[in-house]
Amino acid sequence: MTTPDSRSGTGRPAELFFEDLVPGLSVDLGVVSVDGDEMVAFARRFDPQWYHVDPDLAAASRHGGLIASGFYTVSLFMRAYVDHLLSRAAADASPGLEELRWLAPVRAGDRLAVRVDVMGARPSTARPGLGTVSLTGTMLRLGPDDRPEQEVLRTRFRGWFALRPVAADPADVASTDADQPGADRPGADRPDSDPGTAAPPTVASSAGVPTQVSGPAPTQVSGPAEPQRHN
Figure 1: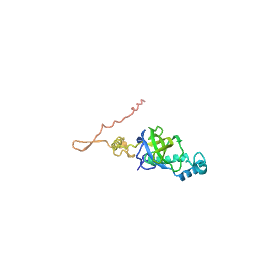
Figure 2: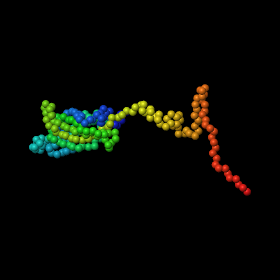
Figure 3: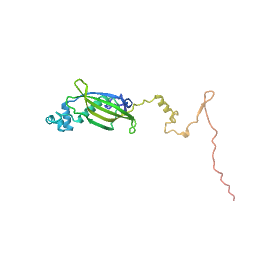
Figure 4: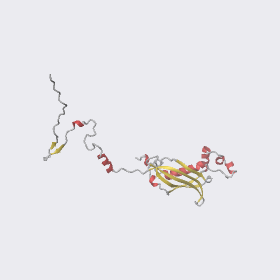
């Protein structure tokens, strides 16, 4: 059974752990296309400002048409991050964002290349068993020739990732069990065993017959003698 620390962000078995996310690593998160209907529906639900939802006002403005809500754009980033990295990595929660910048307008039909870069990594002091990874995410608009034209989003954030599980060595487990007090004494784990009535130890005689080992006869300990009375 896959343990929680061995599951990816989508619940499947993880193949990447904290130790794999080393500084300098760059992960391609694919290319996303901006769907105009989805872009406007998101804005109507969560960010209904006129330049996101009113095509006539937006066309007459300096924007020259509808532009995406920045939160829709970062949602596209998040989906790509989940699909291409968190679905493979032993991801836990995130302690939060440090920077989120919308650098250029995003419009319907745009194709955005998404990437995340690992900037730093260290074991977490607050969450044992996890490591904190510092990441930078970027989205770049692609031109007709698929070459980057302009950066439209940049974000810096941190994520928690589980350390790679260490499998227990069967020899170590057996050794640990053998070292437990009473592990080699039959009946030692029976709570109704009376240590005061245990049989004395035996050894084999030269004839191979068990011989009881006995010590000296017990000596009675008595208190001081009763003093004599003189009438």
